[in-house]
Length: 113
Length: 114
Image (cartoon, rainbow over all chains, first blue to last red; front, side):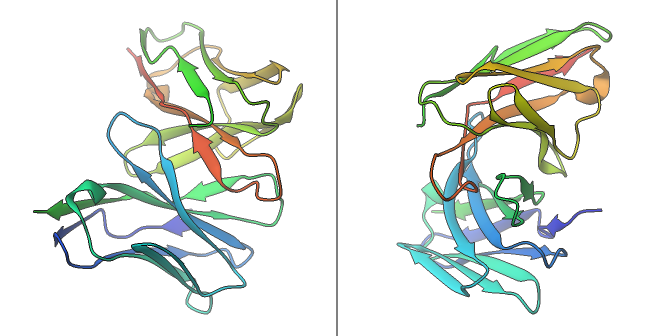
């Protein structure tokens, strides 16, 4: 039973346009959400996060939106750049403070020049 | 880069053999984690540690054991490797402080079990 789902395996956008990556979750006890980016042959790198008490968090070109009633979060990248081409994972955490993360399956983003 | 190294980086082994993967950190972080990454599954937590000799299971712990005798090293052991354990294994640490959820990952170990 997948508690965190990324239903789009891949996304292709043109350089300069907006990329929107989506993530759904089922467990209402999750209170912290994160996005990671992963390049081939490297470990995932932390990108941006959001607490469940907020509905938006912005960091430069990256913005994460959280809709708790819909159990949905999204990552917006504006403007998209070719260097953003990577696999993006969303992750969720409960309130145990052990750092146990549940990851989605990942979405491969391709930004075309 | 949080000073995380993993060894070996690549390993090919045969079914039934024991395998130990090592994660080493240089900055005395308390929390350490082992994940596996498989197509269609993202990353799944195998085991984690919250201090020396303190470990607990993750969501896919069957067939794996861990040990942490020193702060800097977290070992993952496959007692008898199976083909289903062919995967890429990542170690991660959490930075000290309030936010245990932001984890930093090592470069990964690609394990093939024939």
